[in-house]
Length: 359
Image (cartoon, rainbow, N blue to C red; front, side, top):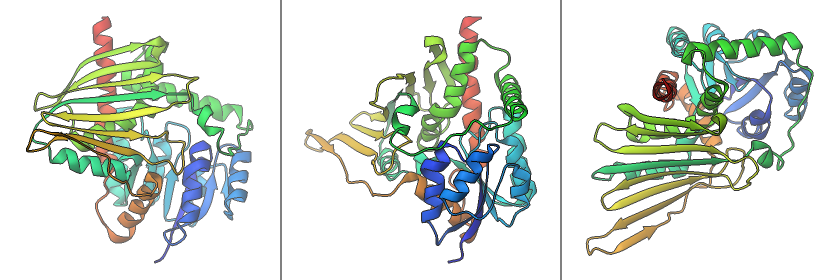
């Protein structure tokens, strides 16, 4: 097996905790050719820690290097770098969120189509063995009546304490301002000029609850409308009700609980005689498995509870293996950039549903 030479843009927490260690471990599939970060210290540190021969601070230098693919996990928005990477003929893995606005989504999708290369979004939860098991169970249900998502989220710093993550304060001030300006422009393009609370909710939806939204889409399809949306706690809590074509409803909540260690994220799908529930660990965890619980009624009317054994493999590793197979074997990508547009559109619709109630 010939490894794919890959460059990594963004050397922060998600790269240090997951992507760089996983790429380094997948030696048959990948060779890290270069790392890049606008922080010179972070780029140099990542290169030294993960034995990468080249590091740089300008993504254009990385695209000009000898790499076949790039993994983008830098600060949002990632649109400019993603489009440039496709234009350079690279295969591109984009950590979520792919972008914020529909115009950005269309720009990325168009660039991917022109390049004819693989464009994969880092939707790791659909590669989780527990999710895959639960999806098969849900596909066998006669009628889905109700779906519930609860995402109770502590501050990430609580869980990052378990890892050695190096941070640097050496990013040039003009680069910081440029990034903030690009974030403001993308947000305004997506949802207009809104209150700070709605801005906060939009970024939580885009950066965290998007895991729940794409999981729902892959399992159940796209909802036909947003029935309602509520934002409270100054934008640090969101609840939305979604309607599906068969009349089922999903109630999904994301709540910030900054000082509580007990991260909880669940997806529950209910039918007339069956419930399937997935429970996920925090994304900043290694070696902790998601779980699946199935409750159903058998032919004799007796309630049965199953908790199947889940394959011991990281969802982050599985999505990288899939990216490699898409490149080398030409298999269809399970989380393509084109499909991510639906998730961006839904986030915008949720915010608009809230704003409509306030008008």
